[in-house]
Image 1 (tube, rainbow, N blue to C red):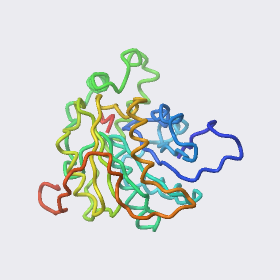
Image 2: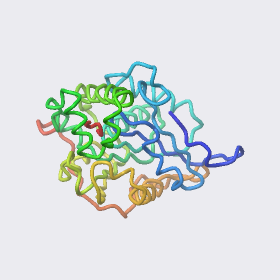
Image 3: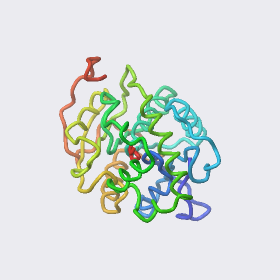
Image 4: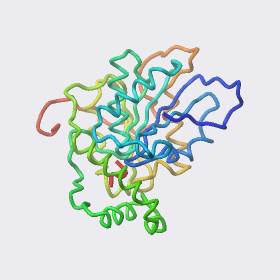
Length: 279
């Protein structure tokens, strides 16, 4: 994982942590608007997956399990701090699975936030079979705001991006919903004009936790989370539930500010059954 750098002096010691997962094919720089908005005591760790950014020379992974296994070991090696997890689109799945693994290790986060991603009970939606060609995938990414039109003209830059996105899409396509829920509270986030995610399905993330659940909606499209104004609000929601290293967690309830949504009981019914590029 890549930590926020340059924001504090050499003697700085964080008291809380935020672990972030970008969209499919995304780099840590996707969260650059977040860095100056974080409270002074919060360390930001952003997942740096193989096949992109500083790890561009490594082969991308095409299954969720080995990705999460490596990330969980990395996180477990960090100095223990109270923390929250947030994933955007495909990153929501990684964040959810990381939360489950860390929970099994006795190192669960205080809160999991899932953004712009429908829950695992809709594993194959939306379909991406129609995005088989590079041209169609690039068109789709441009339409949803995932790539600038100027970038699509640079084959030397676009091809590594497409390889990373396709690897993440393959991992998403092979992902299966776990049989048990997490006990960590979940905050589901979405945007009213997202063309990829059905907003009405976000409340079904309540099926994935036995803890608290809330939902909060924002203005914008699929990549609303990277907007500075939206990011500031999301950060407040996230860190309000994370105690400092010297305080104790009084309970595991969510802050009351996000919109409340009734929690449905988890079941094993058939209903449970990027680009995400964004996912």
